[in-house]
Length: 103
Image (cartoon, rainbow, N blue to C red; front, side, top):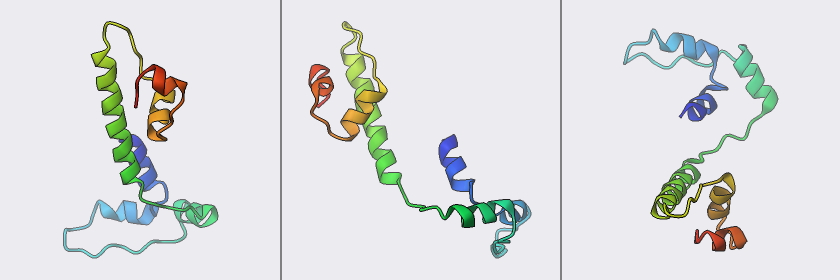
């Protein structure tokens, strides 16, 4: 969750962030200052901001499935590794996937 909050606020205008605390529910949104460090950094970086919520939900489903898979095989210790997550996310059919039955 901290990553999402960081990614969501890294380019937020500091003027908007400061005034947001004092806004009443019906007040209009304050326009961006375009002169604070975050505004200048966004202009310099020219980021490609996109919605990755579908990919995040897919990763959560993969993690849940892998954790259930690890629990089912409790007689034989099976750790979920970063490679397992990547292999399942990219739907790889390599030896790691077949050996651990991660299909």
